[in-house]
Length: 126
Image 1 (cartoon, rainbow, N blue to C red):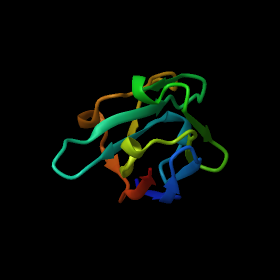
Image 2: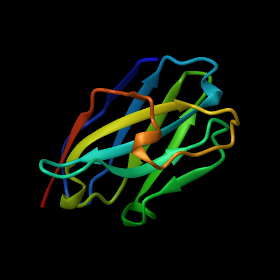
Image 3: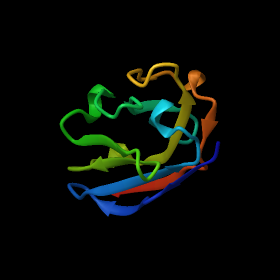
Image 4: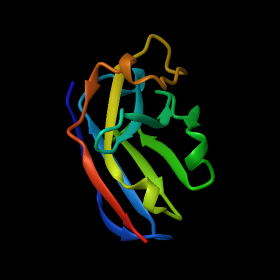
């Protein structure tokens, strides 16, 4: 299984950005996918997760109301829509995927993800 994250960049506070994650695993509906982020010297932190069925999502408290995770199972794609961005959102963002027996599972712990993308840099200036 390979993951390719894209969409990062430099934005100003208050702006929006959409990250994309292409996942090669099939059937894609059995892969729970999540977004994590990491800043220098800190552990990778959970941001958002979505079930294979696409109808169950979970967001970190600090991004609730600003970020949204979605997926298109027909295209093997997962998205992270980031609105009203803040300087503290600055990080390298990674997408992870892991097989789940149920399509209605979300995974919020990084160690439970078996496959990772290469990361995409997001920088929010104040």
